[in-house]
Amino acid sequence: MSDFVYAPPDAAPVILHEDHELVFVDKPAGLLSVPGKGAHLADCMLARLRAVFPEILLVHRLDLDTSGVMVFARTPHAQRHLGLQFEKRQTRKIYIARVHGCPEAEEGVVDLPLTVDWPNRPRQMVCHKTGRAAQTEWKVIRTEETGARMRLKPLTGRSHQLRVHMLALGHPILGDPFYATDAARAHPRLMLHAQSLRLRHPDGGRGLTVSAPVPF
Image (cartoon, rainbow, N blue to C red; front, side, top):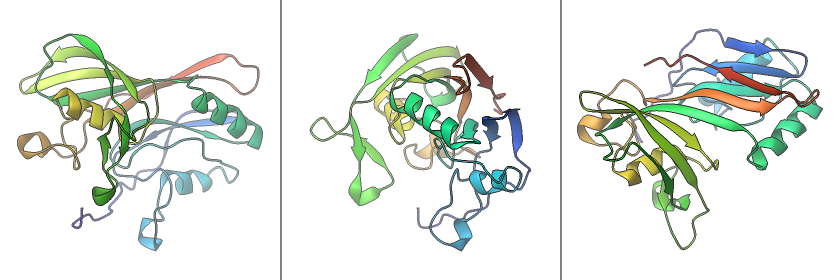
């Protein structure tokens, strides 16, 4: 995307939950999770949080274009604990998406391996030879005028997984600058939001679910 201009929203971080080990935030669409290459890409959620919590540590990321729940650690112990949960797929993430067109079925699973599309990176693509296993559960919440609102549950955590899997299903996510075309692309933002994240708290292991309201 040669015409890309980084212009993140300037609102202060929305804190959804904080305690002695964790900070959950609602990342807006258009803001990087971590710094990019170059001073013009230094502004990000991690940097903004460090202005408030100097000890903050990265656990995972959301795409630039995706909004919703992110968790950060406040101690090395919490970072290790959460890192293992993500690695072992013990967290539960729910996304809401608006897609172009409406699937014939009400729910299903996309099970297609993904790999980077090197000539067009950061785009990803389905590849049965070199791709890494990727699975996404999906369910239609309701139909809309030109498509559907869907609940997506990634069972793996591949880059652009939900975006490529919805494209492979024949229903790209509205406003996707990489994978949508024509009318499906003509939206003010990517219609993908990380609605909730469930994990085990690093202090004691109790279950904790944090949600962020869907902005579209």
